[in-house]
Length: 545
Ligand code: G1P
Ligand code: ZN
Image 1 (cartoon, protein in one colour):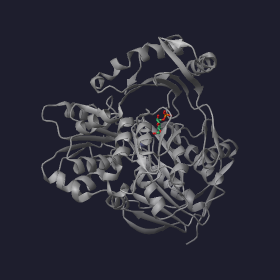
Image 2 (cartoon, rainbow, N blue to C red):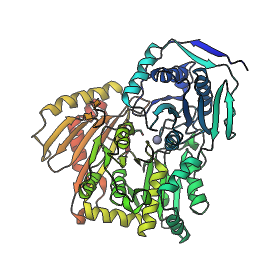
Image 3 (cartoon, protein in one colour):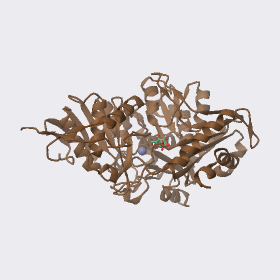
Image 4 (tube, rainbow, N blue to C red):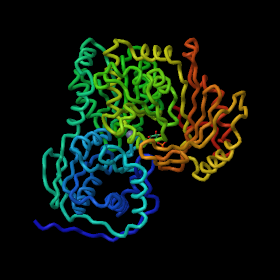
């Protein structure tokens, strides 16, 4: 068969700069002629071409996923790639894609997702490149991709019919092998290596109940196969388990503000023992007990403190890592275990080197992201299985585990206040003013608290020495409480200001306070310090988690 490669003339688009996690834009932006193609060609060019290489391809099934898969397959073929492994129906959760890249030792992979951003024709779409360790491309690669998007003049695409991506098996597209794989099998196999499935099966068999809310996003097939299939949880344990192109109208972000059905269920009189949810691409997780949402920062700390109860981590934890705005709860666990705790900028890509070098085993972010060295992405279903394994191994409830943890280590009251959709110039102005202000803040007293540290967080990667500056303004007080400010790198409308608030409480008699009340002083201070109202016109946040 003769293969035709079309070379298409194009011009650069503005703003194809990958953010915290790849390029995210409105679907309508991605639907412009050449928009996706320019970015994909820029990925290939930044990598020095993909001729002869194998790639993984899949996404969270959101609107435009299937069309984008076909375009990328044809472009990979035109660029001479040897093989693309694609999830059936174009579906691969982000952690499953990471797992598949590692397992089949491919050159890298392309993941189509806008994570927790809403989907559908009016929603968001996204694309990111992961390298051969299965993790998000580091900044030097994303910067190179961006540079290519600025100078692109043409791209190559095979003139071929759409490939059948719904039938598992090996086929050929314009001289390239396309292997359509079961989206769940490899991932499920890895989970069985890590967790005590027999113990979890007994926990369910003993009558314990759970509710997993897939939010009509990509975790559904994974959770259904593993929980209801392999672990014997009753049918109906997984709700909203079928991925829909518009996520059924759900905001696919597993936090108390968006996963309200699950929260209501877990607060009801007949609540199940355990509740969980995952986001659009299944890398985030929310852990819920009866009347209790476990903060992601606490979840990371509890997982670290109890890791040796889980077979895959029985050997112990080499080190832990958290993003800077994540609470310091895990730092206390690391101290007790005598292991290092790394503080990185926001975004999973900063954990990759630490995991590769064996310096960290467990990582987490306050934004409902938790994971380990089993893949190079955060992993929602993994976190849920970790908690199930802890529940089964200890025969305790979620609340008992959390309260016991606080009693031993103290409680880090924690909350994040988001101001979404604010004017970009106003947001930049606020951050610029704050950066000026912190220069003279150390040693001063604010609302009765002495400022011990005030800086714009910068990170020097201990493995490759790369430097990342301007990663968020933090103001740390002498009593250990903190306020952190940064602008989101994943939003698609205006700017989002994130304000992270944390206060440590050692006294168990004071561990049952309402979080917002416990943080009230800091919240007031955070407004005054940054002049949030003056700069943005906002008096209250859009989302509080
Ligand atoms: C947000 C989270 C961050 C996470 C990222 C991708 O990024 O805050 O922790 O890694 O989504 O899931 P942000 O919008 O804050 O840049
Ligand atoms: Zn996600």
